[in-house]
Image 1 (cartoon, one colour):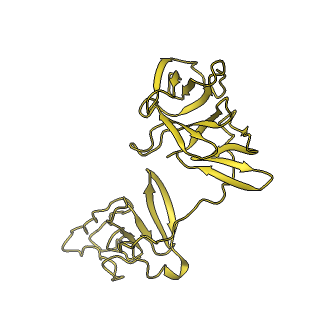
Image 2 (cartoon, one colour; image 1 turned 30 degrees about the vertical axis):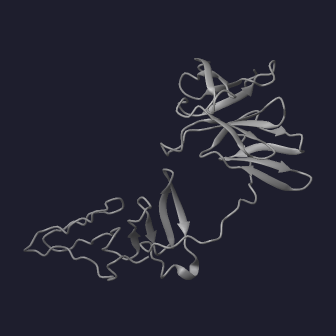
Image 3 (cartoon, rainbow, N blue to C red; image 1 turned 90 degrees about the horizontal axis):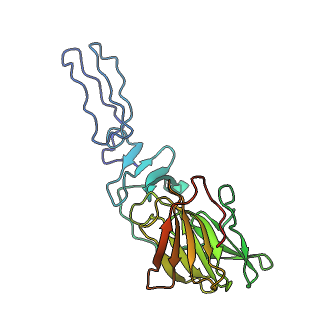
Length: 267
């Protein structure tokens, strides 16, 4: 998207008498400062904002968003992570990143999730009485019906899920997520939810965990009234929760666990 200054002219280096250096644009993230010598032989490099029309920055509600006209891509940060979005081919030449567009009336609905996280997680695939398999990919808990070739999705988490367990009643599911880049929404926590209605029952441990929850297990002897969790922090703390008490549950006890990583836990 072209910037406010639509001229394609390049800034010139200082002449032999002036000796001054061209000024650097305010956005220095991808800018290299041109050098000037007495023979005016230096070549200025590409600027982000105004000196070159092929890359333009936006000052709207997106943080550090830039548009590259050659690639037709917008680079921005989403929850602290850099991502690239590509404009439709027909709109590359006229796309304006500084223009505030109204949101479309249509809403996107997740249809299918591919993959399964097994490289660093264990005991995270269960069969439900509904005939569905429940597992997770990224921040989505997937309920997959093999016979009907259909999926349902629990979308309550704000970052990657790292563990999953099933309540003894085979109806409730508990999932724990990792810490995200967003300090407000990305805190590691546990969610207990209904596998039929996909409604969240309770959210546990916001601000209580260090990095992520690596393992979860409901108590078996008392019918699942307690929930045990292992933190993936340096101390690998083991905490026990009365998840049905109050609106946010209650942490009964907490103790340091093993120094090595624990992906499997029975309670």
